[in-house]
Image (tube, rainbow over all chains, first blue to last red):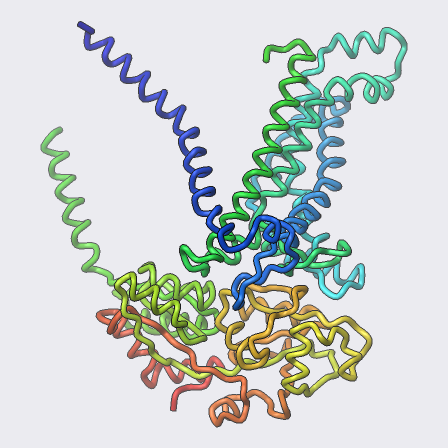
Length: 297
Length: 270
């Protein structure tokens, strides 16, 4: 017979177990719904035409469900964001970890965290109201709502993610590496480039991958800033319609159970798979990096 | 302790039950064209009847109609008639959608004030928006790329424009998509080579309306039918409206509501 104390123990353990597995259950639930609601579209249009079709006209009669422009839009905007957030993020991480004094570190780290906490709609608003007219006037382009506009703000948004993780990676590099490098006569710069960064290489790759993941999944900002045109861009100044923006703009009116609804879920499924793969990649690389440095896996 | 808890709970329960009696609440959702009328009417109505709570949202005609079919709003604003497929969906949900015309509206084709063009034919507007004409020089203007500003598919204004001007053809894929009439107006005002279309109520000094087939959009030309790009504005309810929804609708259709619509630039029902 268990004493009431033991029963209570078991109950508490049970409750914590449920909480821990709750996220797992939510994830399974999301995956299940995505597949359930997304796969029916392939009864009406085959996978090849869906993924590689060039025209997205879901509400016309007959509808066209080619998501290639949406996918390319997402990638173009994310790659553009990487061009900005990788130098900024990794550079900031290097500065904070290697060069900044204690006081500077104490100010810079929290500031970058604050940048991460700015709501994405504020970035979207900024991009639409301030950055777009600026780009329009500076580059004499027809309209400022374009891939470049979205890339710039996405880059700024992803910088804190990249910086935090890269900075963590750099701080894991053992002091002994640095000391050994100085002992053989290397300068600070040589140590940084040839010893520290390669040693933290995996962690920095993780940071970059997660930054890209963040950029691809961003919705509100690209909805407001990228222009919304479902075309394959031929220049950074072309408007684009990333996958997330397409879903956000069209979900409200797609009749439940209709083809458009299933098509949007299929896009969501594609998006989920892409970010999931990115995260797995980041996890694999990060595991290797921990083992390499002799930390527990 | 226990008695105090009991008293507190009873008090909360009473308040909870009484709350609905204090304020009747309705949600009005849908067309961004009808939005200014709905918002202004709701404001004035709530000032006169403090116990009423009317929540007004945009989102587009299709969003409003989807909401009323789902039951998530009480009145759906729409700048286009409800489609047969939507009526079927409503019927299968057990909802009987009733239409109420609240105003007439014209869709004005607008460009930036600095653009020299003043008149376009319907076929020219159609060619611009379907992608056949891409440069202002083809219309007698300067040698600049035309930036077409259009609306997302949830827009009733877009649907009306597509039917009345585009003859149901597809909008050019590189058109910039905006989420509301106001967003289109703002974008056109900021973009020298833009062309867009907005409801009459959104005309301002920041943008310039062009004449279509020789007729300038105005209340008179829309009312008389001379300006062809006109359409009625609807509010849809589930069944005959009751309670606050009925009172609000009567207000909007009555002389006060119509005067407000007129002030905002729409065409009142005469």
